[in-house]
Image 1 (tube, rainbow, N blue to C red):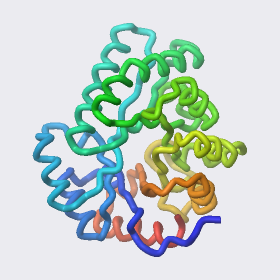
Image 2 (cartoon, rainbow, N blue to C red):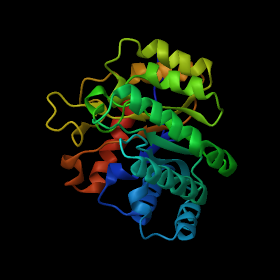
Image 3 (cartoon, helix red, strand yellow):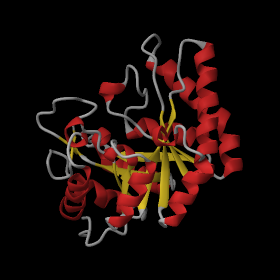
Image 4 (spheres, helix red, strand yellow):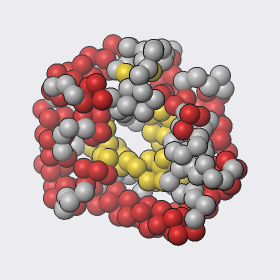
Length: 276
């Protein structure tokens, strides 16, 4: 059973959670709210000098938890697979520049080929970028996505599949990001989280909730406590592995993005204390 959260020392917020804010605003406002953990989505680094970004983060004593996202390795087109490798190498460069120890990989899929072929290309892609990641000191976290995304966003859809790939690659620099939104439904989740722990493969833990009913499978995630996911139970399983990293709030929500982001951030803090 998860212990009750009483402070914000392990709270991390993804910049995309507060999508209307740019990087400087996210850093300033998170810090003012007592939140020191941040996962940086690459869209806020566009047209942003990376040294300036690092200075902004350091000035506010922010702890960069990870960079989102790399991946999207599979394609029926060889040229697109090569472009993906180049983009992942850029992500490694960005992660190293801003001090992110981990890149979250949304691994990708191509509906024009079998899931097995896409998974093969995912493994090949990770192996290609791994030497550069190791040299930069940046780890790679495979994030299995809900099966509804199997056709285009990820051919890695269960934690068991992610564990299989990580064990096959067998590197301290390749692990897993567990996101409750994508995995809460899996009746093998507890044992697969234990499997992560046994191999020291659990690099990140993402939280939000699944609204019932949901109005959009991508951009209608809920605040913890507003849906059907037992976030506290899953956090308990994660912590039983010895994981002591951040609980990362990753919410895509057209509804919340349209509201006052300061009020929204306070709702996040309340949901974090009471339902995470």
